[in-house]
Image (cartoon, rainbow over all chains, first blue to last red; front, side):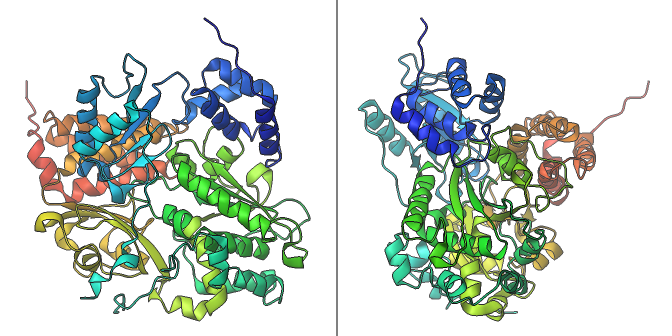
Length: 182
Length: 428
C-alpha cells in the first residue's frame, strides 16, 4: 500500500513564506519538516523525499536532520504520543511511577504503540517543566503538569473521547501572594 | 553582604496582568527605551555597548560572560548581514525560566533584542526556541507579529532608518542545540554538530557572517539597564554578578516554581523561605545549583552559600542557569547520577570520541554500581573516565557529563561505597 504525499497550494505558499526567512535553501528544512509532520503525522522516508523535492535539496540531508532530532517521527507512531519526562527532577518526583503506571494501564512498554494505533508511550529527556514535575507532553504539543495517577486516568479517558487537554498556565507565586514576607 | 530580597519587586516579570499583550506592555512604559534610543538618539551603538558592558550583565544561559563585552567582539559593520541568535533552547535539566519570559513578558525580550540589534548593527534576530515549547513558540510568534504591526520591527524602525527583522525558529528536540555553535548549525538546517572554535561566532557565525548568541533572559535585562542605568543594575544583588535573576527551583520543596530575585541569594533562604521548606519537613541531601551539569552540593554544606558566580565557585560549583534541583534525604544519589549520565549519553552528538564513548561508559559503570554489581575499583574508574573526558572535546558537553559524576563520587562517596563490593585481588 503506497500513498503519495503532496503539499496543497496553500501549504506551498506557506513554505515560500518560510523560505523567505532564511538566506539559503538548506536552512528552511526544520520548519518545513514541522509543517509536514503536523500534516501527515510523521516524516517517513516518502515524506522526507517530498520535503527534499520541495526545497530542492538532497533527500540524504533531510534524512540526516530527521534522524538527529528526537521530535521528528521518522516512523509512524500512535495518534497520541505520550512523552513522559523521566529526567532528574521528574525522576526524583515520581516520573518513573507515572511512566510505569501508563505502561500497565495501556498494556505496552515505553517505545511501543497500542494495537489500535491510538497511543504510543515514550520515556523522554527533560522537557523544561521541572517545577511542575512529574509531567508529560502529548504529541509534541500540550504539557500536562503535576501528574497523579488520577490525572493520568482522566487524560487517557479524555483522549479516548477525542478531547485534548488544554494549555495550562503555571503560577508565578510572587504575584499571587507574599507569604515569604512573614 | 545582605540582600534585601523580602522587599524586592520583580522587574523582569512584574506583577501586571496581561503584560504579554503589546498594548498593556506599551501602557506600562514598554518600548519607551527603544524610542529613547532610536528617536531621541539617547545612545549611539558604541555608547549602548559600553553601557551594557558597564552594567556587567553576566550571561544567564550558563557561562556567565559579560554580555556587553561579548557584543564588543563584533567586527565593524561592513554593510553585509549580521545576526543575533537568541538562545531559548533551555534544555539543561532543571532549567525552566525562559519559558516564563515567553509566557508573561515576551515584549521585554523583544525590546532588549532590538536594542542589542541597534548596538551591534544587526540585520536579523533569530529566536531559537526548543521544539517542545510549542505553546510558548506560538506566544512568541504572536508577540513578534504584533511588534511588526506596531513598527518596532521591520524596515526603518520608528523612522530612524534602522532595519531589523526577527524570526522565531523552532528546535526539534536536541539538548546540544543549546550550545551556541550547534544552535547555529541547527538554524542553518543541519544536524546540530558543534563547530570547532576559532573562528568564533563574532567572526564567522550564521551563514559565515558575524553573529552574537545571547540567552533570552540576558537580552530581557537590556531595556532595564537602558532605563535605569548601569549603576542601578550593579547595585542589585551580588557585586561581581549583579542584577535580577530568574531562579527555577524544582524538586522536593513545598512550592517549586520560577522566582525573580537578586543574585546572591542564600540557597537556604531560597529553600526554606521562598519555597516554603522541604516536603514533609525532610532534610536536604543535595542541591544542584544551576542545571544538571553543575556539580552537586551537599545538603549539610549549604550554610552561607549564595547564588552568584563567586560564592558558588568557592563552594565548588557553578551558577549555570540558576535552575536549582533540591533533593531530600531519601534520594538515592547513585540513581540520580545514573539518570544524569543517561541524559548526557542520549544527548551526546557523537562527533568526539571521548564524549561519544565516555558518556556511554559512564552510564554503563553507573548501572553496574546502581544494580549492586559494582566493585570499589569502579569508583576510581569513574573518576578516571571523567579525567579522560574533561576538556578533550569540541564543545563542553563532555565536561557537563563528567562534572556531576566526578563531584557526586567525591562528595557523596559514602553512598557509592555502600553500593559496591570490595575489590579482591586473588594471587595465584
